[in-house]
Amino acid sequence: MSETDEKTTHFGFQTVAEDQKAGLVHDVFTNVASKYDVMNDLMSMGIHRLWKDAMMDWLAPRPGQRLLDVAGGTGDISFRFLKRAPGATAVVLDMTESMLVEGRQRAEAAQMADSLDWVVGDAMALPFKDNSFDVYTISFGIRNVTRIEDALSEAFRVLRPGGRLMVLEFSQLPNRAMQWAYDRYSFNVIPRMGQLVANDRDSYQYLVESIRKFPDQETFARMIREAGFENVKYRNLSMGIAALHSGWKL
Image 1 (cartoon, rainbow, N blue to C red):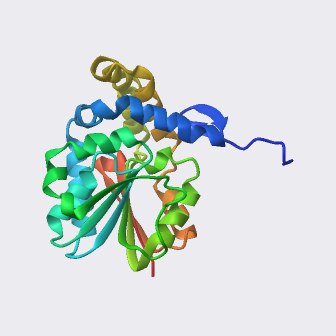
Image 2: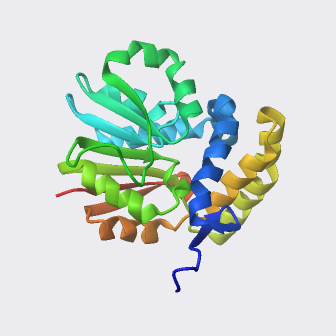
Image 3: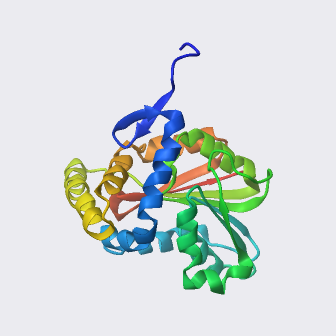
């Protein structure tokens, strides 16, 4: 490749220049921020709450730990973490300030203000020192990162030795017929729902497409290992509609 060749990536099913994707993703989440939590409940029929609880069950937060929740949006994961870990602290990092603004307005944010920080930042260039956190989480966010490998490398860098990575993300159903049925729901219902509830069909069309572009469970587990993590495992949720991936910096 010559120096003049432009690196490309995907934005949903579109091919775009790498340096354009972050701005496009930022626009999507700026557009949906005010309806983000409502749409999560509607799209998943509330099941995303069970998935996030399952994430906490496997993570087993401990008192005094320091959490970095990347693409943390409106704070769902950090709130759950702090409720289970007395004396713990959390940093919610997101590239979209309007998502963080929505999170700060939630009742839990006021109750946990002394334990919680909100930071605008990039998953591929975290504004933190090496070995700063005990736990790194990212929930339904890593598929939106321009270079997933860079985000995983940064996760490894900022975790302390013995620290844990946990990723909750939409994934692939192992059964073709089930995947076909889920695709029909995703592509036919979710963008229309986005139009009705958030007055934004295009953003939810992108979000559906981005799920299909994300690596399957085994491929993503391999990417986590290549970033340096050990004891990498995953668990399917709702038969693989979503999956939890866990890894340790040892």
